[in-house]
Image (cartoon, rainbow, N blue to C red; front, side, top):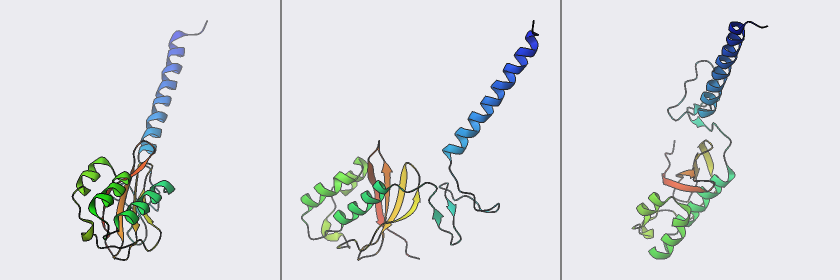
Amino acid sequence: MADPRGSAAVVLSVLVLIAGCSSTTARSSATPQRVTGAAAPAAPDGQQPDAGGRAEPSAPTANGALYAAQTYVRLWARPTMNQRAWYATVRRWVTPAYAQLLADTDPSNVPAHGVTGPPRPVTSTAAVVVADVPTDAGPIRVTVINTGGRWLVSSAGPAAVP
């Protein structure tokens, strides 16, 4: 008959091993980072800066997020539209909280008249994508979040131009 203390030690060792593996897996999947070198510090948002100091996406950019960003800016950049119609179209592409901020926006104050190119991803995770959308009034930085499978704009504003 096997020694019960020896069997307990084996079971305990296996449990410790499993617990160690699962906590390492959870930690690494919660904060995806691309290693660019031993001295490359992570940016505050968990992104790794590239050689130019800009953050690089830590996850592949979702095409749906870029589509939402570009569509929102295309609909937003219509300063000749009446406020009611303008708001009705943009609010379908934004979070409820951002929609409240846009409710009193006068479209005639929107400086852009149109999108001039494709969106450029700035950072991306599975839940949040930040992209710059070029317009005739300069790039607009748009933050898009995944809300249960649907990408919605949570904020937008002028992008810093280097």
